Image (cartoon, helix red, strand yellow):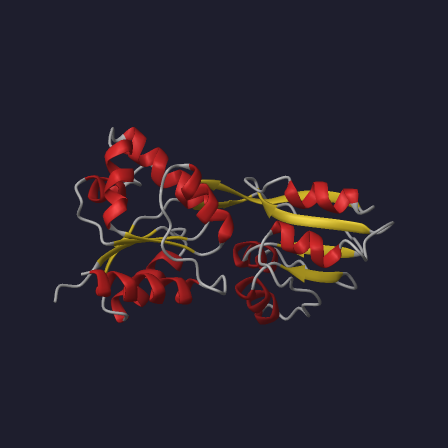
Length: 244
């Protein structure tokens, strides 16, 4: 049996190489196609009662800058973000059951009235969390820790999908879905790439990127119970092998 060809879109800061190695170990032929590069802004969040971090990338950027949460209640979206924060030597106080902005709002809305909340995220973060926390009575500040850019040479996966030569994809954020579609558009194969994914196993790490994909007409086959890349990769590869 040939190895299923699976595309992965993690940032080109080492994580895409780790992801490719994982796919290889699972018996897949990895197609590393980074859709994002990380550009730190040099900014750090102000002192606040609560600090919310949304990604392991944000943790890495802050740790490299020498930032520390101090006495703030440190809140992390997702197990991987919390794990990265703990590895940085910080104590994680709150992790929502649902690993997205809505889940964090539900986690904190009963505790933040009259409190200051610092959100530290990328430049592509949605308005869901600040709006929800302000409605709960919090004084919210937003800090852009890093900007996300798409590499100029991104899009090999889109070309493969358009030719029907891709067996699976593993989307790890809405930005990677959008990057895939933009790269396909620039190569003149957007419609063909979306059609080509009909015969591939499409995985999304959480409901947010899954919804972005569905809105673009891409059917999503896999969303793991936990927002974890290894769980996503295993599910996509196993289903792709069964389909083959």
